[in-house]
Length: 490
Image 1 (tube, rainbow, N blue to C red):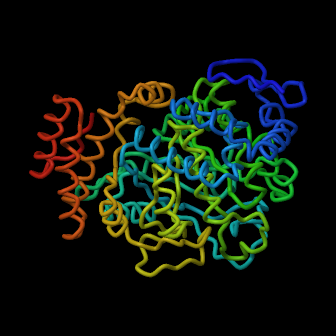
Image 2: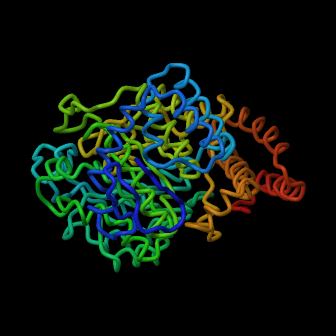
Image 3: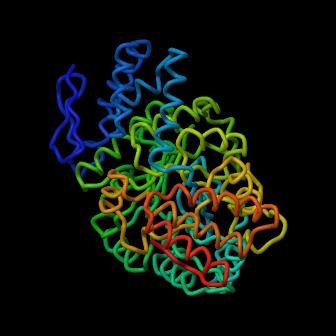
């Protein structure tokens, strides 16, 4: 068998049967090639105990240049206990080298749960008659955003069901304008990421012009037959249109896109390979891979029982998936949500996760209610801690919670961000920006206990900023923040 992989542009790649699949094709059936995935599954299964091959792959991975999907699956399938320990350890080292101890914070904001799709794993599906339907008005969005600002959030992920009449693109654009317009006390949402249904190049241009950060769209599963079964009707039933959405988003000028699968819908090995093949396609065809990869697992919700999904994965497999993703795509952000318990989140933070949500509500209008009313929720939240509790928890583990949005606002997106990240130059921006936004949080929103530990972390971490000039300016800005100034960035 021959396998050729390069990170730069190329036309075709060898499959295991000696034929080729087209990574540069705009068609989903070509760049997510089922035969190649199945050949990869077989190859990894045959080599799961191949100590020499696994040693070679780990040696390559230490260079922080990533792995192709076949190499990555061999690591995921590895059944040699001491080598699995090496995989976990290497993932932690790579994460530390690239991201340091920074963890980016965000929160989802659900605008509407009206939807016309038939997704059988989601309570928003159009045939669900038991869930309460709600769509936020612009006044209600304002109230939600103020509630989020009062927690300390600076970055949101906008969510809405797919309903072209009730939730048209104009509603999403108006909502983005509303969110960016709200300045409450010292609060402001500085970056709005958008997770809405696959759409047209024209609509992606409108989202770009509205000033979004990352466009996020979960594939759910890359297994076409299962995908069509899980989406029996509605616009989302069209596998190709959905899978090719990231290409259209980039054609519409959006530099940063975020991919994800919902682990448990199909065997994790199949979707793991599909996810990496999608990343390889975007890097080869569009010049830059995904900015983020999300790793949600199937969760119970209204009208949904996670026990109905036989391919649900264990905490151990979840940890290993995150670890191997970090090794395979070292410069891509990995996101874990409040679907996961505090224990599960702690586990994957060590091996690759770089972004987490905090204080999340997955119901429409959930942030303006004191109690959790989940009758409009998309899924059950496992980690119900407040944002302050999560920030303090991260600090206690020597992480630096970051509310930074500077790269987007300074134009460091897409291939520009990746080029800085791969040379290590981004660290002189990210670390001081994280410390300055953490200082804002401590001054404006933190409890006394969180503030005390946070101030110690900032003082210690500032010493590790490598550039004398950056460290001096950061100290001046930190002092200014304590005296009432806000919004400094490198």
